Length: 335
Image (cartoon, rainbow, N blue to C red; front, side):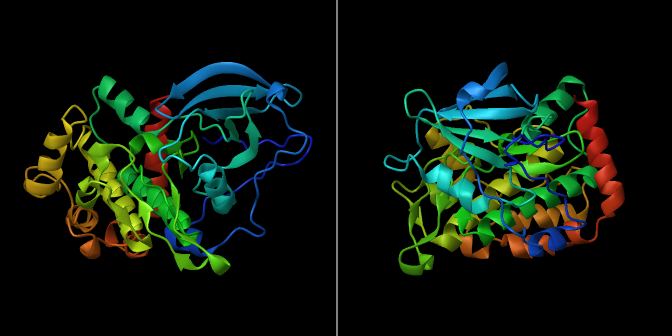
């Protein structure tokens, strides 16, 4: 999770990042030098608890304050793993992803009182896009209008592109894992299910990784195969499907696939029913319809890549300044 002002602690392990002017620019401008999570001289006892931010199947996250500097962060303590034997994979993912402006910053990698992995992360003061959408529902506002949605989608795509460029797949892409702040910035977070896609000698050999962990109502069809594994292209294609569902949910203001369905029900809807797309009766632009359709192709090979999505008219032809302003206003009004 990320803070609206990236503060500096005494040991200067914290770094500030700027959101690029446009998705393509943000993708091509690599951080120099890449930031690296640190732990030297930092202990869990240096932080005081403020509030609980949430808990999931593998971790709990708290809002904490650094005692000496007063800086606020999110502290994530893991107590499980999506894949047995991969307890330290999330830490390695965070190291490889460090320094990208649309990926949540990990400031320190620590150990909990029983040796469990702990991460000191940026604090995002607006929570996640799922929370933003829930608040809009509570306020009777429905989904996110297209101008703001185009900016939200652009930042989400850039975040995924930055992960994929580092040879990483997220594999749990959904509104709850895109974090937002009151400046209108969105970053990818929560890497419990993320996998490293290249390894071996020189780190260039493509790996086949399991893709069966995550939130099943955001699964692409191929992920329902028992014991499913995928190489880099297939794993990244799974992220693109989750992105398509995410954008469609943000637009509609509701779930696309109900999380209350059984596994069999989810598989029927996602794999065998009519195509998931923007409803015909919805007031939506042709660009938005095309963007969602490019993400939600059932055949992984036919799905757009994040690089192709960066050039899609729904993102590339938006009024960047107006879209950013609209997204920020929507986020702020839900705080």
